[in-house]
Amino acid sequence: MRSLGLVPLLLGFFLSASVAQEVAGAPLEIVTERSLPKAILMAPYEWKLAARGGVPPRQWEVIAGALPDGLTLDRATGTISGSPNNVGQFRFALEVSDGDDPPDARTREFTLTVISALTVEWKAFPTVTADGISGSVKLANQTGSGTDLTLIVVAVNEIGKAFVLGYQQFTLSAQTTVPEIPFGSSLPQGSYVVHADVIAEVPDKNAIYRARLQTAEPLQTH
Image 1 (tube, rainbow, N blue to C red):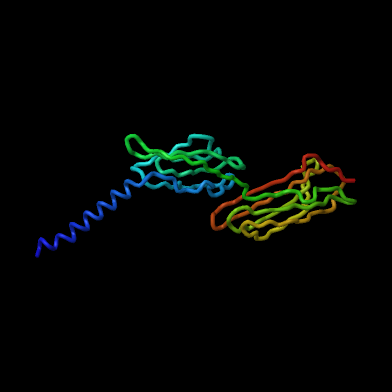
Image 2: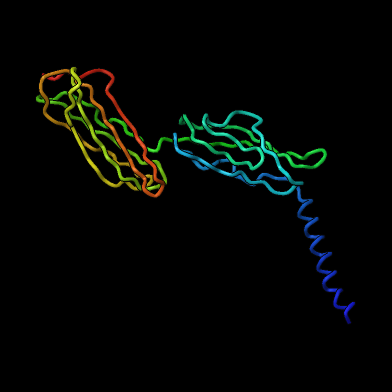
């Protein structure tokens, strides 16, 4: 009776070993999709690439192109991390190899887009009016979180004195654009450079993002 009781245990052991051998013998493949999650300029980024099959341990390597400046690849874990320094779309090829002798390897091309958390642009370029300067800006929150946003537009004269043309505080939802925010004020006669500064706080990430516009040439009021 005791020996018969070992039969199910032994059968279970051999079945488990067989399944483990089958899994270990599965072909090596890269699971991660070609388009990686977007990264935000100067913000911490971390994404772990995934592969399965083959013989552990696995090693990752960049074999063509390059990661965005500020990001690195951990060869042992396949984790891309860091803080990107430039916006744009970056294409590169990665190879993962296993621990077999000789090693098996697979390659895949990836795309990683780095965006600005905030964008601010002139909707109506600052223009001299009868008694001052007016215009408008367009804002976009490209993060995945709502932000507590502050916009301030100032005109700075030739001696460095600043005059407020516009000021607003509001909450801007994730992936939202404000098509137009007007600004304007009367000003003393002088030569002015107009600055539009945007600061956004993201409480759930404990992050602060900034964006700025500035007129290239001074505007002369009369």
